[in-house]
Length: 255
Image (cartoon, rainbow, N blue to C red; front, side, top):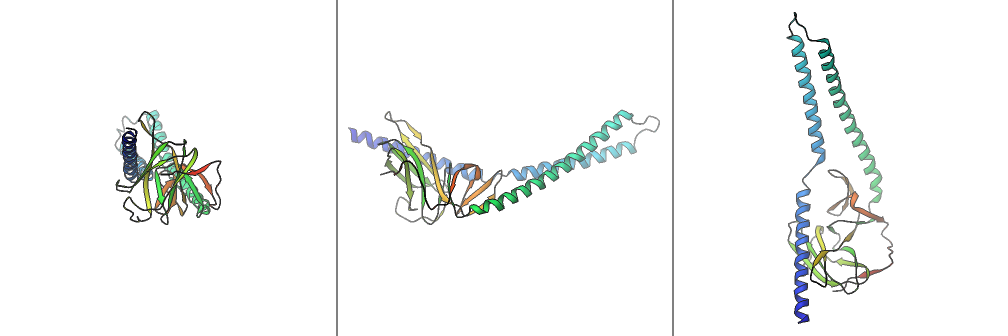
């Protein structure tokens, strides 16, 4: 009876992990096409067009006013002030865009020193580099966890059920799928799930680790490149030389 219950919980756990990994893959795929820089450019272009239109309207109004009943001085002054305000706003936005670009270039130059170092990140993106990837999570001794990995198409390529140890657990993936085939390096999506004694599954927080191979400008943030995987700089929690790692308790989750 216990064995049947255990098998049922394991199947439920794997199903939850696979669903979460697929969801992460779909989210990552749909989110990659957005760009805030394009929005900013469009907004500036719209403002410049409004500026030109305003100038044309004001000029036309002055040329066609009734000489016997000219424009009220207060109205004329108010429209000129609006004209000057729009002109200044266009100029300010243009200079601000240039300043941001310069700052980002400087940041990229400084961040390039990070290439070759190990980075830890809070992300569902698992970078497979040189047929190796790893993640860490904090577990309770004897608890059961399931780890599922999906490719960019949302297809599950690897799932593992393991028994966690107390403290920090590290799971290392050799890049092989469930059939033992070696997969190519790249960005995969991963999920870690656990199950309670009552049979309720829940996500288990984890971090992934990889080697920084480059820095690039993202849509709204600088991004770390780990091989073919890109992770926002804001998701990075730690960067080290990669020669040594230290923790109070580092255990490998055993299957």
